[in-house]
Image (cartoon, rainbow, N blue to C red):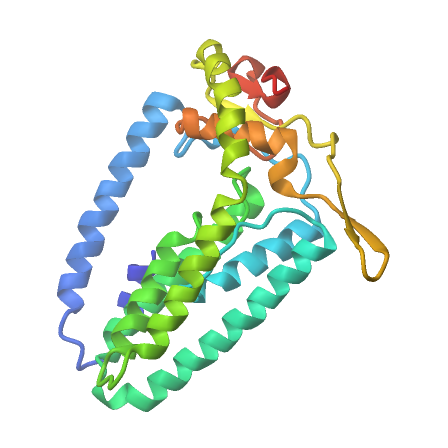
Length: 291
């Protein structure tokens, strides 16, 4: 779709020589997509499995807000964290990340203005349009379908387009790459530490989940039905003699079971809402036992 939008815009540009080539690309790609969804409809009764996933039972304003925060992260090639909860701390962190993303976008715009005389801007327009169309259509699709929130994995295609464009522009007539190397190294370490969290707990819990997954190998979907069971961690600050509590996503039993089961059976689909009609196809996290 993004390529199609770009082609339509380029029809007005007389100096663009690849109109015919893009038309052929759209023609063959469109034919392939039509064949794909046609086979799906004839074999499975739906274009992309939408009749199996079901419609969301509820969609609150906070989820839309978090999705918008997630989409804004598309322009950031350095750091992308999946939204974890509706807590004030989580939302505040995502807002701070969005501010950083906007500053990065401002920097990218400034780079384009400085180097535009030496750039093949039509190439970058193509990447930006593909990224924007993908992100917007995914956001709309997420509203109407039961899919994950807008996170780094869901938006990887859009992020890749922007990042590739950024790299081409950044390294054009570059004198030193020290800054971007240091920035990339910092976020590499940050994301590594963030991802590791508590590896010993993961291995211990995985050892308990693996034997149980054998009896659920035929399940197609997984739903966390233990969201109401909350594990709260309390932190105490000795000097100030103050305490505060925080609900860590990676310590909630339902989330832990879902994450580990997903690594054991990557083909199983996570459900945001329990709306699949055939319940026999769903693995509920409460059926997995963690000591």
